[in-house]
Image (cartoon, rainbow, N blue to C red; front, side, top):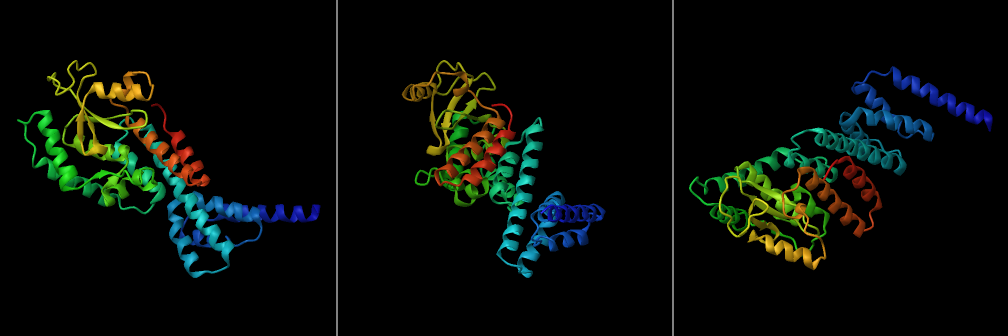
Length: 315
């Protein structure tokens, strides 16, 4: 038994020396892929770690081997798992960079989260589609409109022309949290619809931001010019009005938030009336996904999404 262990350790040492001597180029990646079917778990573990270090550069070689080199189900399963691990590490790295960035661009954060499920998504097409919606709204706006009139025009283009709406039938479906699928299907949950609405609004210099209510998510049109509030008589939170994007842009006031909180038996905290940070929005998006996958019993995705959520600092 000791001899077997010694030979296994020696084999692992030789492999490690071989891997370390390899240049990080295409031939070396191809050679590593050929070692995936090694029956020794310690050998495979080292090969896996080295391929993950290669990052997305290794994926084409892994996919090619999966298609052309059939060594059995274990081999194919190992390749699939390595590809997933590489893609997950890239999402983690992207989210860590986003979290450490002072600006924390909301669209960028949403795209990073979508890449968890759709690593090959076309980021350029997402931005292009959003720009198309923005242009359609921009053509209808002018400097002489009141805030109420701006919201009415925005709602007309966003909900009636482009037909975005809240998905009340499959409210908890994971696809309602990914920005690419929300753009494709034109439907989403309260957070994703509000997120898209606010991204476009802010790109048009409309001060519309997310409000992180318990059990719901809405928007606030902020008073940046000392205007008379549209429907908030006291305007105590600097909000001209609130917008329920999940309900086709219905406008409401502070009293309705207070009533909503009373029904939930929640205190009237300022955070429920004022805009939240982009970090809070992305964290809530991840919490929504965690809840979605908990409902279907997908513990692996719950674990990974929890790791991603814990990267986001602050509220």
